[in-house]
Length: 401
Image (cartoon, rainbow, N blue to C red; front, side):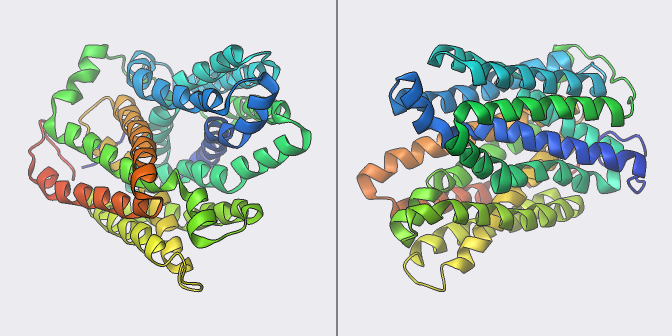
């Protein structure tokens, strides 16, 4: 029996629920673009704010580790707030923060403008996943969550590349101003279209944190850390891989990255359907595909006409694993669904940070070509833990693997 809360348990998603889920997906697009757009803006803002590129790069680290450290606590404290009001408040904070970033006179104000939305990003992901499942019904919860996670694919495909182009054409401040306007628009749409949902039962933080006493739940969160570490050990350096190993011209790398995002739309669709049948089974399948894709992309990098095959496999598995990991962790939680979802987001960000660090340490010593193989080795380690997780007994009554 699924533990994802529902308003229409087991029912087909209604038209009443379809529109809010779609709006949440667009809101996710805005939020993910806010998080990752800065990667493409670093050279321009570093020049204008008169700081080194390495110092500017710490804005990325600041965002990721703020998400990791503060997300679970804030989600627990805010979990009792009615979801419609919570989403509106989050999008308004993103609007104000992006507007502040657009006007930032120095790196420190810009850091503040990045720190504030990072506090609420995991709150959004935890509660949006829970709300999508509630609106769709338990039989379609995985598909609903994958619909929300389409925002990630759309951000990779359109938001980040187009935002970078806009920044190059009109300046990086314009890119943040556009995000501020989009955030405000999404707050208005949520306020108008989303129904007022049943008020979540208020639980003390200690009561919610009981899920951390469940060894099975903790193991699933740990599995997410391993999977995202494998994913981002290679993905962080994908642009360099395309340019250096595959021989893609620098001017065309952006188009290849857009292609990777487009492939991800297929992965998101497949992952959402597979996870409804078996969360752990879907995890096994797509981690295997991910490992094959990452390793073969390196070995076939110079083989013209063949590289595209593992590149497609990599892109499909990479994006599929976002909703799969989210649903897998939330399903095994006995209660405190929002906190469970946010803990998975924190786990993902821990993996993102670890993957970038591991790849960065390996490249100077063994070369860029080893990154894909190392990422595959980490994904193999994740696979080895899955049978052990399957044997763990949960402290909940109705455990779901």
